[in-house]
Length: 159
Image 1 (spheres, rainbow, N blue to C red):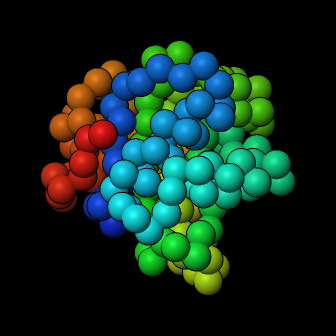
Image 2 (cartoon, helix red, strand yellow):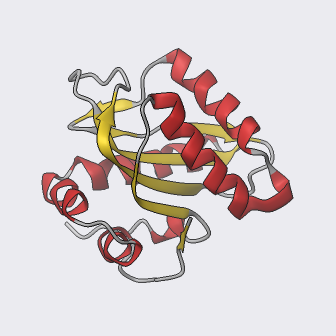
Image 3 (cartoon, helix red, strand yellow):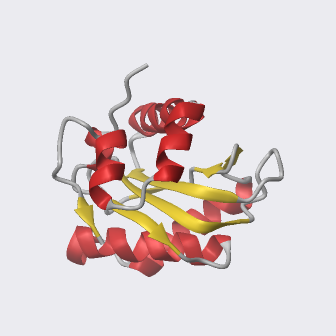
């Protein structure tokens, strides 16, 4: 099954390999990178607060070392994503109790219920594939990650 997350990562961010010692630190890395891309629209603090509020409702650790933290924000005009692979997995209270080393943050407009769910499903379908996860764990550059997740475009920023 071909995957293409270009629609979410176009204008988003790819952090191909980074260190974080906790779920909150991983979320902060992604929030800072996304806030940098979104400019004055939304701050890293607002992103972290919204995502952590969602995390309190239930873990976004979906298993197999993958977490998909997400939130809806009034300052966001369209769904946007940020990818991060951690050198060492962190605890996201995943359903399989494994640490997560692949983290895909998704932000969507506050009023975009259906679009938000479609985007979550798209990311989930992609990262549910063991072949995709295995490839992502083997690469360490922006270009290599982009070739896997968004093969139809190379317009995704490294942070």
